[in-house]
Length: 289
Image 1 (cartoon, rainbow, N blue to C red):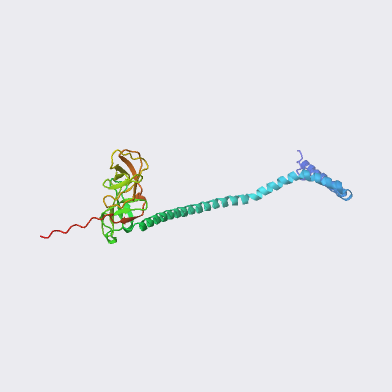
Image 2 (image 1 turned 90 degrees about the vertical axis):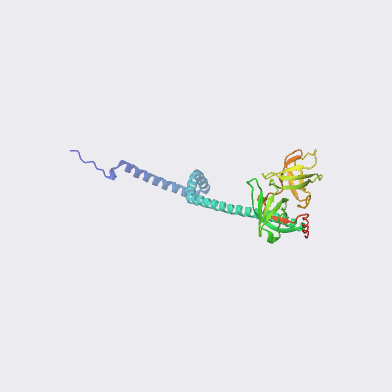
């Protein structure tokens, strides 16, 4: 029977070679160290040159290890910065949205202030103003064009009074209640306003079309209406005071042209109610029997 093989580690050739190599390296390291010690003691310049040579060889390796260490140590910071940047972006977006809302509010307030200042200037120049009131609603989708004014007979508003804004004429009061009044807009088909052209005084009438525009019809014959012609109230008829802006011609035409009013009730908040330019004389007393 064959003897059992001895598997003790001391008889392993691999371990023997490893131990021998370790001894050789230790001895070689000791010899190199001794040589370097002697060189540094008796020949410092040669030792310095040798040291710089070895440093030049090992510097790239050391740099690679340092870069790898920095990269590994910087991973937590990179992750933290990633989440911080995302949270910071969310915060900046929210702040930008708040700033945008504040900017829109400021623009709206500035626009309202400009309109109110213009309206105040018009009121100061209008000695026959009755009241300044708010247009609370208007019809913009039907063929008839009316608006509701939140002022009525208690504020002095009567049927037949003109209603205007800072940019121009709006219409006239047709019905008046205690605290509200109904306004017939310029664009209503039943609205007829005597006007004149600003550049030459040519008389015309502005008639509503029911679609947000007007027909300007010349009273004179053989007249051409051109794009951009401006028309204001003429004062004829005694209802509307003269020189209130009414409309601008939108297309070229002959005796009739389509025009756009200067003012749109849908975009207007406040309006001025004016007395009639030439009030109707009081009715004569009935004869006594």
